[in-house]
Image (cartoon, rainbow over all chains, first blue to last red; front, side, top):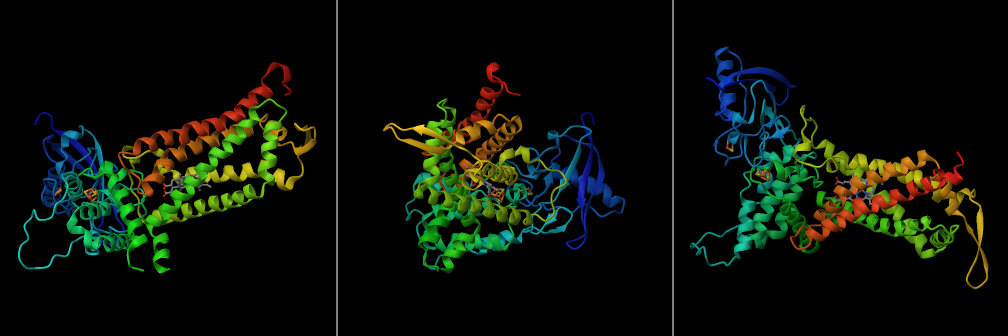
Length: 254
Length: 241
Ligand code: HEM
Ligand code: SF4
Ligand code: FES
């Protein structure tokens, strides 16, 4: 079709966690500008499968920007050149005919490569398990409006709660730090009254878990917020720091 | 004490130590600058040498000065530790890097800028601090005080003016101050963020104060050697080269 593009892909191919990988070039022919980035890879995979080659492994699920699965670093940027979106929301109209696009997996000690572009993000699950929850006793259902919360706090908690756990913040950070993710989870629960009983242990344990998973230390470059598809801001990291200082100064966990 | 060591050695704890030591060094910059500006008084050095004499002999200042060395050392050591730990968090890097799309150059090069500052501090101390305390190579100059006494002060003023007639030394100082400007362009605001101080009410003040620290103060520091250089070397009357 007129307006379609020919693109060269350089994709990180790696058999499994134990082998060394390398960039391999592929031609993506006759790419429609209306395709999503993942559809473009689907088409390349069709060709590979027909030739009997191993298709490019990549994570994806919802394909509408809510699950956070579609992790890939495109030309050096998590989720590609546009801000505030995931890879599945990126369209080929953001590229030009003849472009060469390099696609790499998230790079972090805490996110080991499983295969090609697929990384193991279970470190995030373990960080959540360390405190990213509230404990609620079973029994009668409490009226949702019984606990008062200010509109301001509920808005801020909601902003934090939009984090989809994609890991782009880690991928973007020069220190592979998971502070933005952590701060979104800690902020959300520390702003809500329901999160207050476990507030201090939560921040202490979750930060400890982040360190144990091998993520780096935040140095406030702000790269995470720029690359975050949900535009979680730096003020959440400042809140995390305040929560941590307050917890260390006053919790009973000695 | 377990809670204390774990707090300090945690990633947030180390950042807080960076921030507190960094901000202490910023406060030192102000005091040091006020003293240095006396160098531009064309008074045969009486104001600057009096200041230098006071600074190098007052016991309180001498104690603060030792603390200052310790803090520079602590800042540099924690920085080294953080930088190495952070490098380990990404054992395999990206083939295509695009940091410029999401962060400032300063924020990505604090280790490099800090290393330049460390070299600068070492050379600077060797030049002036070492010469005053242990070198014995700087002659004294006598001044008549208000009550008629004659006092003899180490003529650091003359020594500095002499050093800054050398274009290489001047260039080294100016470049180092540019590095300091970039270090503080990220570092000053970053310190407040590390301490959790990010709030619509204070962010404006942090910004304004930040400009003072990353631009005005380094510029004034750099102005001193430049001014002296042009006064000694390029005024037609006293060109000795
Ligand atoms: C002795 C040489 C120095 C070295 C090696 C050094 C190194 C560093 C590094 C690597 C950082 C970033 C820390 C991080 O990424 O988390 C930093 C931050 C900082 N530095 Fe320095 N620096 C030095 C001297 C100075 C001086 C002389 C000043 C002030 C006059 C200063 C003020 C700051 C401030 C305010 C920060 C921000 C702290 C934060 O982000 O929380 N540094 N330094
Ligand atoms: S903070 Fe943003 S970038 Fe990080 S995991 Fe959450 S949604 Fe993804
Ligand atoms: S596939 Fe779900 S966010 Fe992209």
